[in-house]
Length: 224
Length: 202
Picture 1 (cartoon, rainbow over the protein chains, first blue to last red):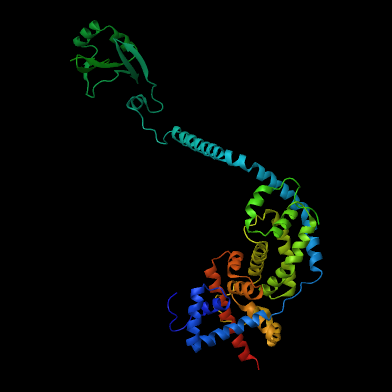
Picture 2: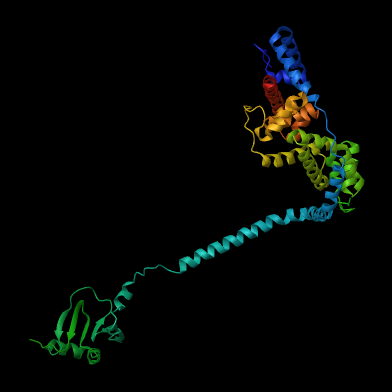
């Protein structure tokens, strides 16, 4: 404790009156009081307050209170006894609970995680709302009302027929050279590739790759 | 009274080991209650009934309310005594149960007083009780009820109930330094309230 200058704090004087100061602090307070009339007056004033409190008479509880308490308890006792039994049971089970609780927590967490993950999975598998077609799907798509594409294998290639026109799949994106079906070149082609005639039976034209060139054999066009 | 505990189910060993702070007599009393001896609780009321009633009276400032609070406090003591493991003395524990009850009930009755003591007499107590405060004892009792609850509790436990600082610290659940400060500030506030009351008395 530092020097009591200029005066002893009321808290110290109050504790001093209660005899609750450590011996060293008590001595310091006494030394200070011997020299300081102001603190002595403060001490007396505090003492007076304490004295007036201690003179407050103690009041006997109403005589009927004991009976009231007993009656309340008698009403409450069955509940307390039942509760007590439950608590005793709980106390006996506590070691078991302590052992199994971590497992229970792990299982609960795992279950929650599982359902969470599977719900995410379901969300993913629902697929995107906007379907971006693959090139093949885009090619296969036709406006409603037009012919459904028809596929056929011919001459070791795959052809697809749309609106009466056969077209070999996977052709390079170039404008085909048209060969009229009645032209001599067409006759040569038909002789060399008999499958062309088969296709032309069911269509009006056949577009295909002929030695690195895309050509269209077209019926109804006359050669010049 | 009806027995609370079921004989043979009480955790005797644990209780005995933890009851280091209990005196032998108090420990025996608690054990008898735990084993369902109705006389044990009667003894507890005889021993602490007056103490709890006076505490409630000084904290509430009203006899009827103090009687209700005492009844309620002993019901709580009855319910929880079986679980009392003797971490403190039985007296300190009973005070703590009673004080906590008074706090919760009285804080509902009126809003918490501000920590400065600008109002010498609680206005909620009405002109009648203020007029009666002429008598010195009544003046002190009235001033006491006007103290902020934290100071009132500390002062009542020290100056009316005569508890040591360490015991008060256990009852209130605070450090002894806080107890020392609250008691001093409570006494200072009381001194001012009483001085003002004296001035206003013709």
